[in-house]
Length: 170
Image 1 (cartoon, helix red, strand yellow):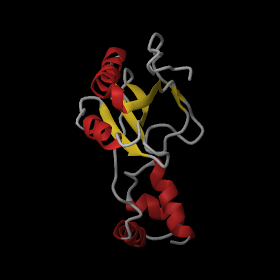
Image 2 (tube, helix red, strand yellow):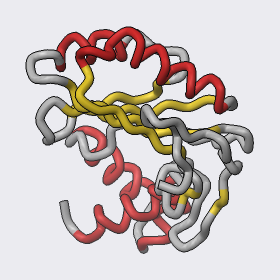
Image 3 (cartoon, rainbow, N blue to C red):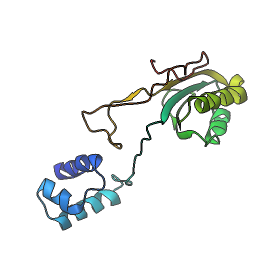
Image 4 (cartoon, rainbow, N blue to C red):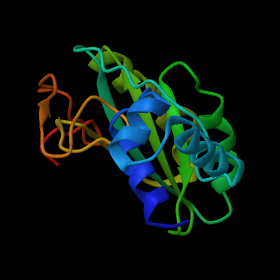
């Protein structure tokens, strides 16, 4: 990957629907050359797809961090992986016995319910569980937020619980 490829990727982060003509014009090459470069980046696995990020105004995103008891990681992971109603992503991190979940809903009550169900089903297998609602997106290269812009999200006041409720301040 060279400097031109890096420029292409930077331009496409802001607008993946940019035409090959627009892309070529922005980096000083033809439409055909820009298309060949993009196709080469796709073939190399550097570009893995094109996504549309939609942020409904009433959408609440919450991060849930679960640290399991030793030897219980697989059981907890198996359970949360089947909770598909609000969970968008699940990550295994470098921290031992740690699961990071991204959950989304238009209702604080839905997210509290999700936490309650995880706690109820896996309580004895969980060493700790903390959750925090996203209060503000500062930078999102995949969404509608430009490099320096900010987009404030819905206030999620009243969303904190001792068991790791979605604390918008934390």
